[in-house]
Structures are given as structure tokens and as C-alpha cells.
Image 1 (cartoon, rainbow, N blue to C red):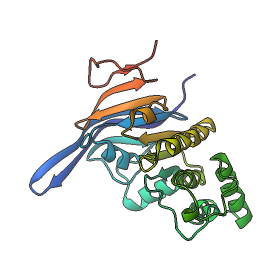
Image 2 (cartoon, rainbow, N blue to C red):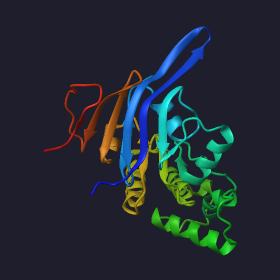
Image 3 (tube, rainbow, N blue to C red):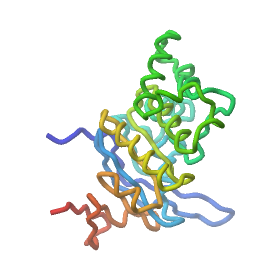
Length: 248
């Protein structure tokens, strides 16, 4: 039985007005991502991957088309409703970590729960959840350290734990290994694999082919369109605008 679709995108377009010029960042994207799928998005500069990530993260709205997240059409929601969706259903992992510098790893992870108006957890419950997520990413012995006392890879693992703490439906990771050396990058991918093994759905932007190879599926964008989709690293020339190939 196939996993239920968490993301369903139909005819998605995004057009920006730069002065008197219209720029088509996305030119008609159709895409489905299942629950508990781990997907990478790749493409050259100007391919539309950042625009697509912003729409998936409810940071922007499409010009046309539909975006269904967990069955809800979020394409035309207002700013306040999108903010609630972001807080309730989406966990973000950024290239630059975005941790509070004077706050311990544990308190950084607890922070999103303070803004979650849907769940009124006690301090003890928040502490327990934050500790569990830090343990999941291998930081049980570093949770009382501040960011300047942690390596870059450890800071990113704190960011992953923070993204998980409100039980989001979707984890969006934007170049999560981009500021790290290769060893730290591998540690981050192992942490994301642990999240995926726990049932998490992850969409990751990356420009590194070896990092994308960790995922189940790589979506290649070019000029605002899906150029091809690769499964398990097996790529072939597409016959249409969207061709999905499976390894034999």
C-alpha cells in the first residue's frame, strides 16, 4: 500500500515583477510527495528551487496553481493563516543554523514550543520533548552547551532537533550541509536519516550530488520546470517534462 500524499502540487507558477519585466520563476510544476518520503531538490542558479522551497514552506504564495499540504489547499491563504501553518506543520532547517547565541542547545530546541498556541505544554513536558529530540540527533551530552561551544555540525543538529520539536508534518532543509566540511555534512545526513526513520517527511535543497544521493528521490529543476526525477541515483533522459525513473 502506498503512503498517502503529504504534498500535492498542480500547475504551480510564480511570476515576479522586476521593474517593467516579468520573471517566471516557476512555469508549471506538478509534484507529489508522500508521507515519510525523503526528497532532494537540485538545480542551477535561477532554476526556481528557492522559489519552490519558499512556497512549500508557506513563506510565499504561488501566482497560479494549487498547493495542498496534508490535504489542505494553502495556495491562497492570507499571511496570518500561513504563519499558523508554518508554526503548526512545518519545521525549518537553515544553512546558517539560526540559533540564539547566548542560549543553550536545550533552550534553543524548546523555543518553538513557547510559540505553539495549539499545545499548552508544561515546562516539564517541553523539557522532556527537547531532550528526546537532542538525543535523537546524537547530542545527549551537549544539550547544556551554547552555540559557540559547539562545532558547526553540532549546531546544525541542534537546528534539526528544534525543527522537530512541534511534531511538524514536513521538515524543510535548505542547504543543511552548505556551511560544513564533508565529515560534518555526513553527520547531518545521518541525523536526517534518523528523523526519516522515525516517520519524518523531509524535503531538502542541495547543490551537492553526493548529499542528494542520500535521499529516496532527487527532483532536478531547470528554468522553472521539473527537468527530470531520479530514484536511487538512477537518471535517464526524460521523454516529457516530468519523467520518473526507477532503478531496475
